Image 1 (cartoon, rainbow over the protein chains, first blue to last red):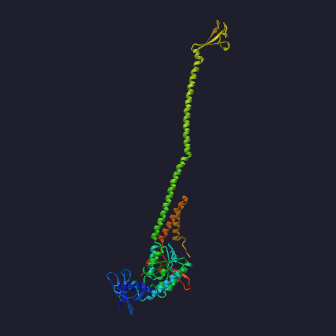
Image 2 (tube, rainbow over the protein chains, first blue to last red):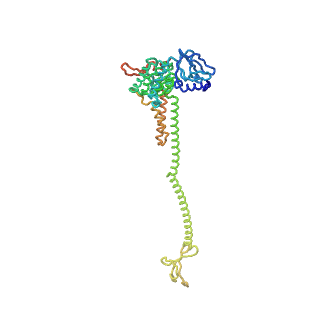
Length: 407
Length: 87
């Protein structure tokens, strides 16, 4: 009996691969197991087998993922994240790993994921809940262990960047079973202090790097809720850059490290000095420009004022007066000269008609008794004594005849 | 409760406001000059605060009766070399 349909190997492999791809569980899962046959090829890709007591599964970490990863060693118990798919050339199914955590803590991860999902659903991680961090804080609260290197890092950073800030340390254990309750109490004590005594601007919750178990207190639900309930904005700085804790998600600001948290909490004094110098120089330029404008405005006004000054008018008047005076003097002199001329001509005329001068030319004046000047023949009669006045005196004379003058 | 009369933030904000008003212009010259003098004084005060600043570290203590106290512990009062956590 001939087969009704025949498939190629490739077709079946592709079909199986498509089934894997459709599966929800296989597409995104955490897998715990023990590493065996681990080897990294020269290409950088890692190949190994994950196994437990009864089964094994081939696993791959691509080079790009392997680069950022602390690679496991033979026999390590791990929890790996990735997806399962088919490698068709060999007919194998394989686990493609994109994240790897030390094993034996699978339940911690499950718990982490459960709490993260729950708090996220409650809205505790919402960006809208995040409060701004005071940029020029006066007082900081710090929640960490007084014995921890984290505190030293924070204080060094604060001292270097902004020693104006006053620090209030709320000491507590940061790892171990008692740590969550201690951290919660410290956050609450700082909030009380802030309300009852001196307001705090920011709280830093910090812990240095450590294993997942060591950082576990910062994944505690009580701690998360205490951070969310804090009336003071919280900066978290827990572990290293790659560590993310629930506290980080709830905090108003997540810093990668304790030092990073201190850096985020305060401004840099050097930048402040530059900003201060900048502000002052703006003020200087501004006032300089104002003064220049005022100065040049004043000069313009002064020039206008001078043009309008009565002094100027007075000077002009004075000049006009001088001019008039000069002209008056000149006119007067001319007038006088004219008068002199006239007087002199009158003088000459008068001189010309003066009786003495007339007598000098040979004329004489005849008078009769009583000094009556004789100017007519009718005034005298023959025999009458008369006086004749000539230029140098008088003499007596007698009228001898009187012809009268024919007309 | 002791609070410094003028914090750095107060001074800095006043300086910013002063410069802003100065920049806005449209003020009589005498007022501009007064603002500038205020700005210069504020700048000086801010710088002086930064110059003199010394990180103050205290430790919060919860007393048996539940009351809070801030203690300047011996080790906390001294310089960075003596801060807790030093290896």
